[in-house]
Length: 230
Image 1 (cartoon, rainbow, N blue to C red):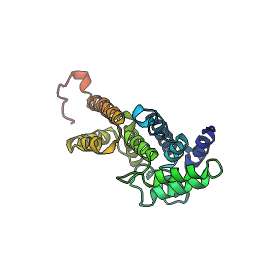
Image 2 (image 1 turned 120 degrees about the vertical axis):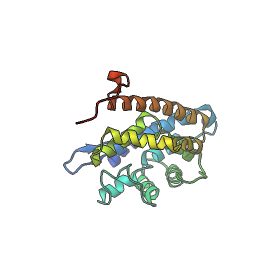
Image 3 (image 1 turned 135 degrees about the vertical axis):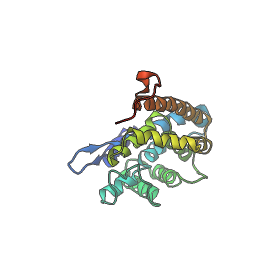
Image 4 (image 1 turned 90 degrees about the vertical axis):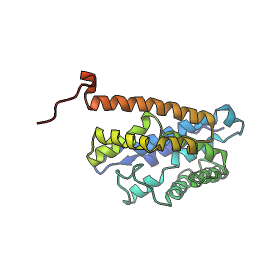
């Protein structure tokens, strides 16, 4: 199989957002490369490897599954605050698939591009027709679990002028309404990926409890009440 490094390099160009003063913003690029890396690791699991997924399809689809953000940002129809923070429009996956097909044309065989495009277009469907699409779905959902999932919340809060308290409160509301339990039940097709999500969630819960302790400085006085502000 030919090296896929040119695909990664092209995606770095396509997905790197440039701010209004020319500063690079790697938020979209990092998410996409992280999901692609996770997807390749999922493809190596024994229960998945037996289905013989195509690595080129996985890499192309995973790198460009959120590329609709880059398209709309380049057209001035999305801000940096929107990227991976706001709900995308209905044609989001289509935009990503079209950019992928155009950008990687000549770098991958037509059948690989067609398969990768289908994986992107059906990513949000309940019934995903391709093994590469199912792998991508699990990798994308896994990115919402664990410490890494805090980064979008921190980014959103920083851009909106909010602080640590807002991140903690959002976490607590989701926990109270059983958000994570529902996500675990509905998001994963592969047992080992679900187990990884559960482990990440446990670690995140401990991290959030520690963050709350530090936010209130409770670690100084072991929970003693703090005098009211004058």
